[in-house]
Picture 1 (cartoon, one colour):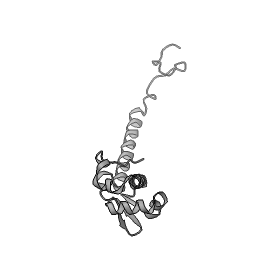
Picture 2: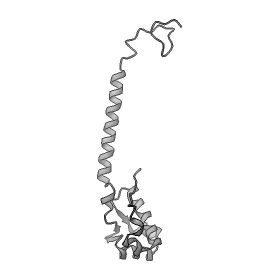
Picture 3: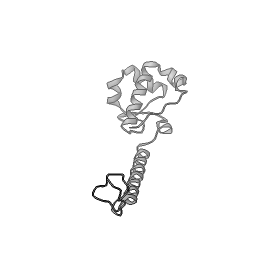
Picture 4: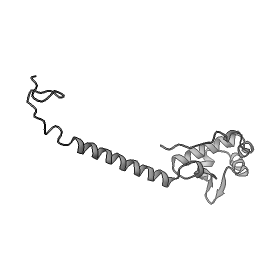
Length: 133
């Protein structure tokens, strides 16, 4: 799961004030969509029209919160505050490799641990080897 980061100064930014509350609601929804889909700030036009009105979209573009590009809208500065798809993929790869190394390390450190013990048939798990039952 990814997170969409939003500045604590967003609420009264001039672009936000110009766009208005309804349009900003669409903007937040679209930004979380872009973050979840790892679109790097790209918002498909059909998604925008599904969740917002033409007026909201026009206000977002007029305020500069969105830029029209071909078949989508673009959120300026999205990647300034949020990780890109490539960065997320690289992080996942590093975390996967780290976890693999951790598991390999545990497997190697415990391999043969119980094989070298002199365990009597009556011993319970956790007993010292050779203890009476």
